[in-house]
Image (cartoon, rainbow, N blue to C red; front, side, top):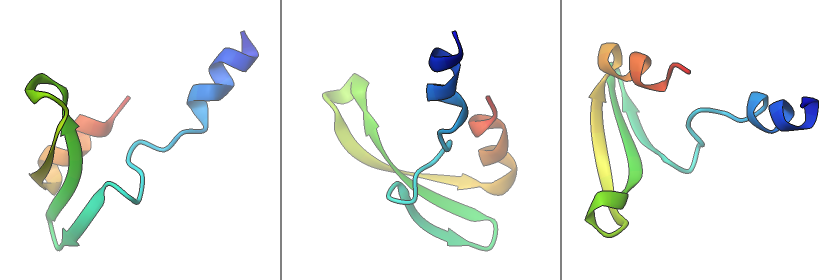
Length: 56
């Protein structure tokens, strides 16, 4: 059980390679859209919208 939990407790929510830019309160992330054939997209978020999305 400990080994299983350890795999998930030390991971970061967003890797540095996915972060495109951070401008004041605007965040741009690179992601893969699995519903559209794994196409790469860039998502734009305001800070207040971004925080609830990464909470676990």
